[in-house]
Length: 310
Image 1 (cartoon, one colour):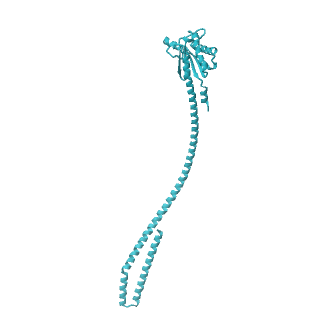
Image 2 (cartoon, rainbow, N blue to C red; image 1 turned 135 degrees about the vertical axis):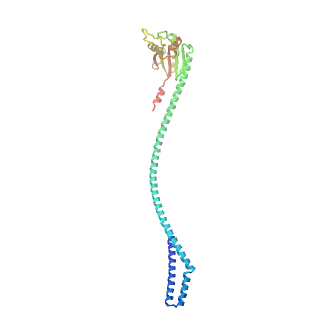
Image 3 (cartoon, rainbow, N blue to C red; image 1 turned 120 degrees about the vertical axis):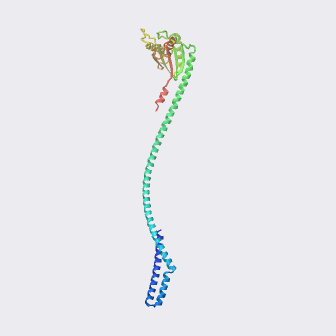
């Protein structure tokens, strides 16, 4: 743009010089004729001067000069405007570039922090995954132990039922619940009223049960004595709680002393009248509540070890 502007100015200057030379030549000729010429010559010169100044070539040169002057002025104005716009654009570019560099620096910091956060999260996830695998392995081991214990309980339930088939339902029952085998013997089978001495038929039932228990040593044995709600107070037993505990202890002693079950497998507990299985309002309900329960449960040592294992 600047080169074009210089070319136009040069062209205008050349035209201007040409017009100036033409004017000087005309002026000199006119002056010479005026000084040395006669009237007739002067009239001829005047005529030529008029022809020269009114010729089409001269008029075209004048018009072209004026147009070039106008274009020169317009170009100068445009150049000034463009220069101003260029400087503003340069300033805007500089500001934008500074902002970009600032944002780029901030972005790099954010990316670095994000990468660090991702690494931390990744390490945390790896730890949790390892812990989860460990827990899952422990759970599988526990489920395996529980499955073996359930299998043992199912088998034990069947064996005990088969061993005690010769007794009536009102004398004893065998059922499985809560992962344990419950052998419930009535006082009709085991004891006389107000007594803790085991009767002969009750001893026979306990002997058959002991034979099964001696073959299945991985089973703990809990003996619970229960009564109805009829109060008792004798020289031997202060109340039903006392009587129920004495009956449970008698069964434990019979199983250990006579039938050689390992004592540490057995626990005796007196419950009194506080855990009835039937209403005490009827004779039938009272009879069901007067019972001794022998609760057989698989040993939980292996399971406890798994739970405590770190």
